[in-house]
Length: 606
Image (cartoon, rainbow, N blue to C red; front, side):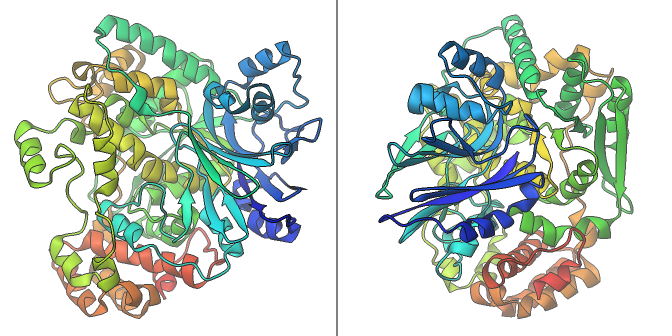
């Protein structure tokens, strides 16, 4: 797991190593073990390394024996052992123990078709000096991030947005449409990011950039190619057995110890069972709960699972001030604004695990793959009403996060007039699905290409990498994703209970009674904190914040605070304004600032 950055220049220019070093410095948290820079012709590559596989021999950027190819990669190619055996049979012998070299050699053997052979989570830049092209690739589900920007003299890329800011010719500018999406959807999705001009390489995509800086898009995987299957319960269980076994065997490949983030839910418990079945031994596990709040936590359930599988378990019971002191650092880590409160305890879990480990397993993806969320199977009346009132997505992802009264009162002119509908990513995803799919499959797919890569996996990658920890998510092995999406609806949901097949399959592996628990999710008691004097202080600071004054009507903030203090809503809106104010300072006004893990968020509003 690493950070990568670099660029390809036009008109015979040559890279400046100092510029590459500045970009790499912004990614040091992603790769504290090693760093390197490589320049050849118009291309410069930089990498900061977190050593997981091939500890002694995996230095990057990596150059082929003939000097033709150079690679900077982030992530893991889990099937590198099998691919290397095939490469040796073709006379291409790896010179290192690193899984990343498999990318280099596979491209040498197969050209762009090598992308279809990779299994894993990765983002990479590969320079082919003979053809003069630079290839930017990203894994199928978007587990690993990759951003790029087209400038007059170059195309630059990086694992995180913050590493692109030092080379922008002008001060970064906010993209109004993406900001509206964050406010209304809790994240911005698609190619555009919150900073104008900086784009995402999309999941399952490779960009091929030639010497004239022309970009050719190469889509090598899409869940749209999945065909619904008529399959029975017994056959599906047998197939799931084989897929989970294969995914876990590959995901457990590591030259360093690993641990597990353990909630009280189904997905992390399944991972605990599978790790135990595959001989992981007494690995470390971590869970989180809260003191001083009425919100229920899952520490007891997590401890029960840990005891059942003999894990070395560490429960964290957090104070509210400890949780919300993570806000500035979490915003800095994420780059992209998300109103996902779970980022805050995840940050503390990552720091705790990172003191002892470089790798942790996590259960992200189980709900999307096996239809665990209630929003995938709403009651008929709810679905009908929403579809009638908000057409275009079958009643799915219809309502904005902000109450209409507050968006009308608080949005400034540029936000009100921002081009593009807030629901555009969901409408686009829904509209491109095959006619043969059910609405449940469409709902799964819509989340797989929006909320998963642009919200949930941002948390999993960026919050963990903020402390030099690699997160592994076996449920997002693309073979499992294809299997889960193709299943008949009645194997996913039974009597309005989701993940039916996964639960039936996993039942014999888990502690007795574990599957009878209701689904809770990874909640954070925001309402217990953002109230009273805290809400008033946040409101006062927001009025003076430059970003807030540029984009919102500050005269309406006192009314929002008053509503919050009367417990009449306003919590999401006030929290979103606070996040944007801090983000604006870190990414627009003073790029290069880095909060410590524990800070007073009020001080960072301004």
